[in-house]
Structures are given as structure tokens and as C-alpha cells.
Length: 100
Image (cartoon, rainbow, N blue to C red):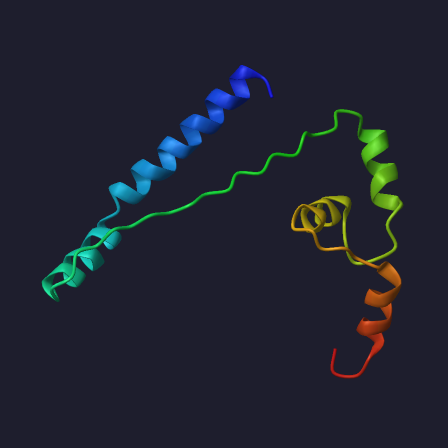
């Protein structure tokens, strides 16, 4: 990954942290919890995913046309990142089942 993108991701993380830290809604709830006799430790984890955008519009139209099922290539890539495999035939059959 190039240094500029790494720097932008770092800035995004800092912006998220700053937004949460300065949130009046969060501050009010934390204050209420402390008034109940508890100390609050708030830890958030953010996952930032990046997909490189294709610059060739013809190839992206071809890719979109390749799919007959309910998922786009981005959907399939995301599911794969979660280690979820998708069998398009099973999805079509489940979608036809009553109550689905």
C-alpha cells in the first residue's frame, strides 16, 4: 500500500477517535454510568477495508454482467474475507423455498 493511502487511513482513525472523544451523547451516558458508581473504559475497534477502484468502465460493466445471483463481486469478496463460501445454486434454491 502506498504511503499516501497509509497516511489517509491514519487520519481517518484519528478523526474517528476525535469524534467519539468529543461526542456529547457519549459524554452524557458515561457521566450517568459514573454517577451509578462505575468507572468506564471505552475501547472501540474499527476495521477499515479498501477496494481498489477499477478505472476501466468497460471491464466493470463486464464484471457486473458475469453475476447471475444476488451478490456482486464486492459482496463475494467481503464474504470471502470473512471465510464464508457461497454456492450460488444453493442460494437460488433457498430463495425459492417457502418462508424464505
